[in-house]
Image 1 (cartoon, helix red, strand yellow):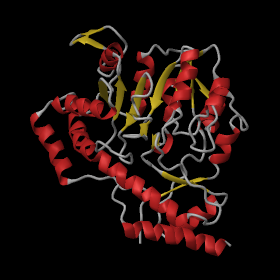
Image 2 (cartoon, one colour; image 1 turned 30 degrees about the vertical axis):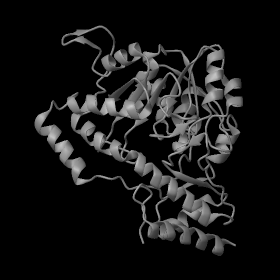
Image 3 (cartoon, one colour; image 1 turned 30 degrees about the horizontal axis):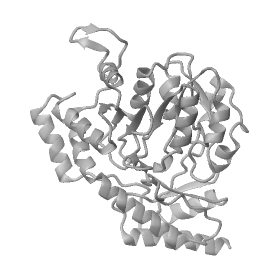
Image 4 (tube, rainbow, N blue to C red; image 1 turned 90 degrees about the horizontal axis):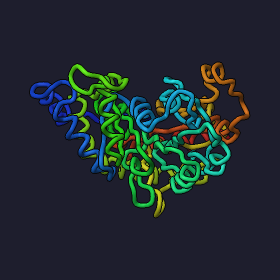
Length: 367
């Protein structure tokens, strides 16, 4: 049996929604874009949502709209996709990193407190793999130091922290709609969520070349618009998000139950009364990561090493900032042990059973 690591959904209804938008609306910033924004804001419980061309664009605009500029330091997690830092490094922001918690791979508030300095302007917690960060502690640290909090919620669509949705836990939230995410738009796309009217207006202006009117531009902007057809797909995907997330949580619970006690496997956190993750990825930890990867790939089971190389040890970051191994010991150790196994909304019982059988077979052979 072949089981992919991810399998994006694209139904006939979604394709028809895109076709209808192409036939009847403006191709950029059409009616479907505003409808998608309204629906996404309702889901997150925020006043505003601003659709943009990618999750990276969302992070960049959210930071800039809150006054983060060249030379300002942003503290984030190095255990994330490189875009988390690229989003502000691209215009001269300075990266700072705080180590993560062993338990859930999100920023450790104790390490964050130590990482904040006088140049720090903002904190960007990453809700990694769909697991919300420890936001009460992070917000308290930020408030005490007068810092902006921008959630990197690019993997956390619909996740809940103490009764509130990801995207409504800081000054702004940022999402990606890349095809492998819990919901997508049939291509690249992103969203900024906020309760601040001025931030919303500025983000809308910056995504559209900084336009004040058709031929007037009073801020430096970008071409970060979301295409109308993509927004139309997003509307249909959003309707299914909660059901898809429930299926992911059920699959994660199945993996936990079936793989308990197998080898040296360490499992991701399951939902609690306060924190409800959405399992963008189901990521195990093992000292035998590469051997397990090779075995599963021979069995045609998809795997991912998210993230094999943390941001601070990426070649360009070492070259630009002189970051070295040993800076973030927990992050560096975990990045050598994590392995993601198949997780997607429509994963079948037979596929789950096959993945479990393959993992057990590996450990039976490995001894």
